[in-house]
Length: 309
Image (tube, rainbow, N blue to C red):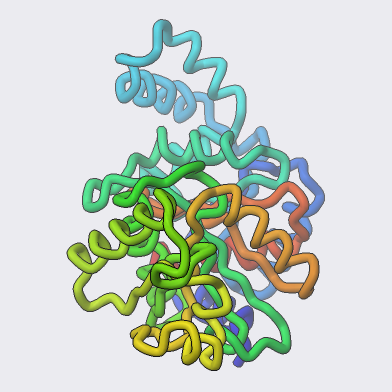
């Protein structure tokens, strides 16, 4: 069973309700039809008639109460809630839905802000970040071509603790959604001291923090990409690596590196890129690339549904 089929079947095994607030986008309409036909999830396509006045007023009051320390006037909140994105997120907060997916016609910062402000950050690690599930055809690396890439959407220049938290969140998603044993690589232009610099020091510290936070996690760094995913290269560059060139969770040193890498892999290898999946919140949600297809939306909904199970 390939990764996409696995994800859809797993979502269908226990149906969850997912809100799609971008109801005017034709890709969303097409995706909703595919999801309902495949019995992958229960869908709320949040058209105007489904936005209830009494609920919207209550959500505005609740949102204002949550954030009034940073908001001068409730009219600011009313303006924010003109976008159904915030109504959808508050539906999830209130458990009227299990998750939401957006981003076909919103930017990643728009979706991320709505998710973080409405759903709240899980206090366990205290960090919101994101990842992609990458499915690369005809690929022997990773988990038969399946990888987690992080962070490619939220944190521009993660510090050592943030990198460690990104690694932990991404590993947990790999296990819950894909059933993988995570093998995590902190990526760099250096392999175990082959170069020097502050960027390398940051990764060394992140590795130690991650090991302290999750002693059972199989993680290594700093590693160049070839030493992380190609066993033969790992055997030459760093034969003592506990992941042995078999990494399936790749943690990038910056948002710039992660975002460029996922788009290159997606376009040059015709890979499927599911996400950005927003991690570290109290309820699941997913962003989308504005260049997404209807099938991409279907699969992000499926992943979000699995995370809510």
